[in-house]
Length: 302
Ligand SMILES: [Zn+2]
Ligand SMILES: [Zn+2]
Image (tube, rainbow, N blue to C red; front, side, top):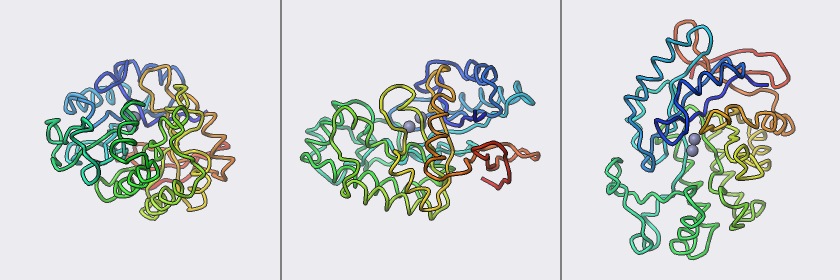
């Protein structure tokens, strides 16, 4: 089994367990590295400085046993300054910016500034992963039932994540399909869906940003497929993209959950290596590569 996981939530944001409980469980599972990635976004309130302090304390406590890395999951629409003290940043797109389309106010959405916690006040962030009801309002009221236009806007925004927040890697690339297994609003093999997704993917690969294989929906039974789905994962390999395998655990029972499935998916798409993060001897965080069939080799700066 892969012995590292870099997408971990705790009680500081919307997780169920404390960072220490998560670290203890990671050790018990035999992990060598654990990256904490508290949410920094408009929909989840987190005391970022208290969070960094606690992760820093655990880095000392577990030194020599577990390589703890202090990260955040920063939303694409959020102010990147909030993540300045992070050792790595997951660039995730949870929202569509509905500022240029539809009647946002009558649909009951709230302008970003009105949340009081985001700097870009001209944005109307509408989550694609908060509930089926919200997704239906977004798709029907804002997009007039055109979910292909919705997914196109999603991927166009996601492509900008590289320049907006300079992430270490991309989180759950095709989150816009979060409710598609139950609601069937997109045919994920239709070119109207695939073309914009592939354009965004190709652009992000050209920026040399790895993509996570995110097991969070699969390991919670929310979706059959991983993020990205097999079609997109195959395309990622074709573009020469890099991967990192993560659980997106919100409680300790999900740490490294579904990694076997992710590993098998990666191998079947042609990937031989997965990337992991690690502290180097001088304390900086670097990329390393793990052979999906066994050995490790090589590293570079994050
Ligand atoms: Zn996320
Ligand atoms: Zn997450």
